[in-house]
Length: 192
Image 1 (cartoon, rainbow, N blue to C red):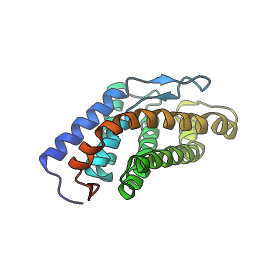
Image 2: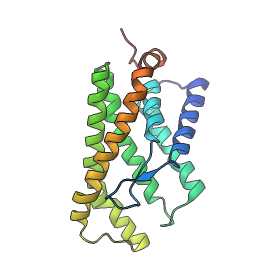
Image 3: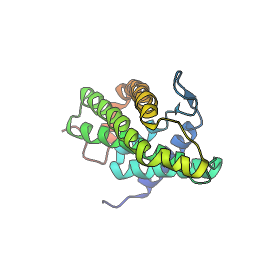
Image 4: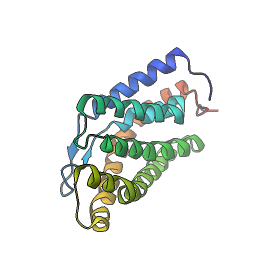
């Protein structure tokens, strides 16, 4: 990993803070359970990845979730929801970054965002089945009934819809910011 200079640290801190603030602007999507909400906090994290690489996105995801946990706490007493948000963000951002790094066009970004959406949806379904829902059951005695049915009818389609919504918002921004991002990037994504 290349040394991070002060500009990178400050930029990642600012993007992390923006992501943290965006976590407060969330909304449910009917007919999914109201505790499954969409927010746009992964947008600044994706910008961090495009500007400074995949490690920057991991740091930004971590900071936003730590700040969220410290400010709001958790009903479970442990940050299960924040851990889920961290992994969902990473599963969305990293595939997007790596595909865009290979295909430096708007089409490449679209393909990357679609891959990120599919990655997040599939792997979060697996994580919910094996880790997240059992943790909620253990710490909060929170049960969703038939876990497989809940994941197939709730978690998987919710994450697909969430990914599409975030993709649309990001693409609207990206079309205006692409040249600036490519010019500012320190990750080798610059146009040749």
